[in-house]
Image (cartoon, rainbow, N blue to C red):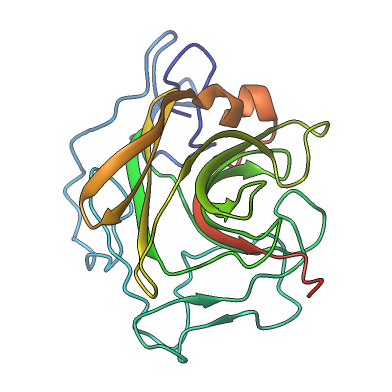
Length: 251
């Protein structure tokens, strides 16, 4: 793993490729006390075709959802038992049906994500959504497990007004859809998108929003990302950035 502090790491267990030498019949990759290096000289072997999807190093990646099926790097929480997402209704858009399965529950929520592959990373999306009733939410999630995640998105306040809010779940005692730890009023023109962004900075995360592309307001900065670490949350799979929509569906 790649820790950012002591035994804290949010990218889960990873595969490293290292040269091996043999000493007294035993394979040796690093000497005692050595740190696994990030970069090594490659062996003089034939080069394989370059992957269309970056898998290592620093990179930027954009998904326009212009295919008829999701690529294999997109992940679900458990196996979908129904088709609640659509790539053909509005080409170039991922349409998600809000459903009453919470991301903090034990069913199959309306969540589609992609792994956080770097300690320092940024994930953003443009979203068109308006909550209709109390409890409706949709947005961007930094998801470690059912019990440990941050949610940044739109909901309704106690007066029924649309707000951008940050929710956190840090254990089984918190509500399944998390606790609201910050919110701000948001005025959006009909049909206009809202922009959401999560910046990971090792053990700190910034959560930002905007109504104009590239112009960001920080809702909360330097939030404690250790809540998403393996040491805190358990497991070993790391954080996934993804989109999520929920509605109790009572109306």
